Image (cartoon, rainbow, N blue to C red; front, side, top):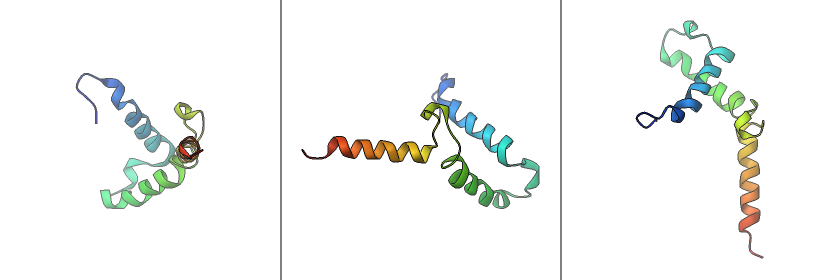
Length: 80
């Protein structure tokens, strides 16, 4: 994920991991990785990507940001 000697590359991953650990999940409550998979997938799909605001995206959720970007991109490439 990160290039050697480039700590900036992993900042987003570390931010996500912090949110995952502190906002939603207790790492001690799962006995196996399989037990943790469903709650983690749910967190990513239903909270982190759709509800949680991100400062890097102008304080809007990633899905909202992506939809606005796609809409603006399609407007700019539409034939005139």
